[in-house]
Length: 452
Image 1 (tube, rainbow, N blue to C red):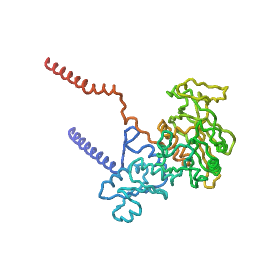
Image 2: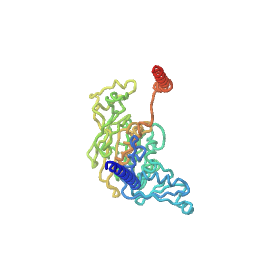
Image 3: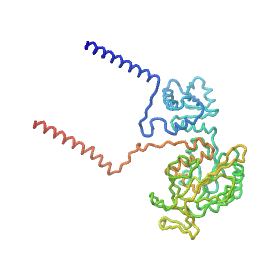
Image 4: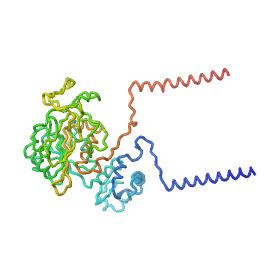
């Protein structure tokens, strides 16, 4: 009897094992389970890409013009599965470009595997398929049309196209990837801001603006235009008082310095480092540190129809320094209340908004910051400068859904930083110490066996 029960138990166990194997096979055929254990999930979609997909309301139709004989179709389909897992209503279909070459030429299909993305009546084209290019294309679809950002030029402003340390070429190039088109605006060639301009940027002019340029800017703001104005401590006499009066702001004299900088390793008191920010839509959830090399403090001058909110503020140990500062004597400066210097905290970034006087817009927005270096090529890579600049531009353009969009952060374990001494020690350890240790262990084991 006991023997019979043992046989039955064996058969039941075998049947149960087969049933479990069949169930696992059935479930794996019906459902996908993807696990990414890398730092930050960099083997799958980034946080930024997932956030963009969750923000897209409605289906996205993607057409790939790829030859069926190549492996490119399977590669594209495999790549798109990562996006379709997050957003199932992304459809992908393939068209053989060889079946109708004339139609392909009319569509402008020039490369094998070219993709055209359709979303809410808008389309974007991709020649190269990477996560960065596809996610940026989806961002451009969210904007609808490319946004026209005009950069005032002709008076020593920071260039949006050049690669000099003081210019904005790197920042503008990256913003263009997400649907922003930068154009120059020289008031010696035009008398007013062109129509359909979404944003005007006045980036740290070095020369006094002519009367016509100032009038064009004030008229543009008065008529509902959005503006980003980056000013500097040395820009206090550039005929921009009328523009400041229109906004109800006043640029305070002197250079904003912070005595707390030495505690975080900053030797120049003119370099402000921020980690906390006043609450605003631009800084909501923003935790990255930023650096501002040379700053003018700002203050509200008059009551206007604008709703002004500070979003950049110096620390309690800051003040407006009136005396010239050089690197050799930077540590000797002191706050002098008798000279009229103002004690911090002081605001140097304001976001202004009001009901737009233009019937085409619901709200008008302006940002004024007492520093333009933080977006320059030389300082853009410092901490969260790039991300703060992106948030500011997206807010000014009214793309609120993109303002708090998370950005992809590179994993810190991709690069091993090691000194020459550490490298030499590791090399000696693997090439000399480890072999010697193995020889000693083998010798000791041989000696033990002989004694035994």
